[in-house]
Amino acid sequence: MQKVCLIISHLFLLSWMPGVRGQSRHLTVGNGGVWGEWGRMELCPEGYYASGFSLKVEGKQGRGDDTALNGIRLYCVNPNNNVNGHYTTIESSVGRWGEWTSVKWCVSRQLVSFMLRVEPKQGDGDDTAANNIKFMCSGSGVQLEGDSLTWGSWGDWSNKCSRGAICGLQTRVEGPQGDGDDTALNDVQFLCCN
Image (cartoon, rainbow, N blue to C red; front, side, top):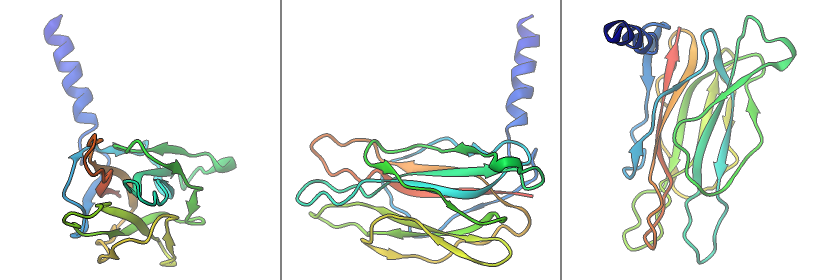
């Protein structure tokens, strides 16, 4: 019986591995922050692709400790069966500070590329790491910029999903530092599905 359970759990794990859904590549950028740990890769359901996003953002804290971008939430839809705006959401690791912004949608399209706005290390200053994100929509190439903060500078665009669209994400988030300098979300990578 124990052997049967082990085989079943192994088959279940294989069903979540890249390649089973036709995932083709990870999308990354070179300017992400360096602090924190990578969360789990989270995937849209089978047949769903990311068509929208919202951000968890902590506003400017004045003399307090700024963290800026704390989380990214993807809104997954089935492009072949998007009845009554049905969607599901996914997120990887998320920082504790801030509020979720309103959703930005690629109208009848999917997310296929991204870029990050990142503040470099500030030495003795207040580090925030990732501050904002932009996505490119399939087809029209429309760009959607998140409603977040403006510290740092934009990096380069990631590669595009060559076929299909973004279907998963994994975030790098630094946990609370106590009396230290909190940065929250530092980096992100996305997964393309065919």
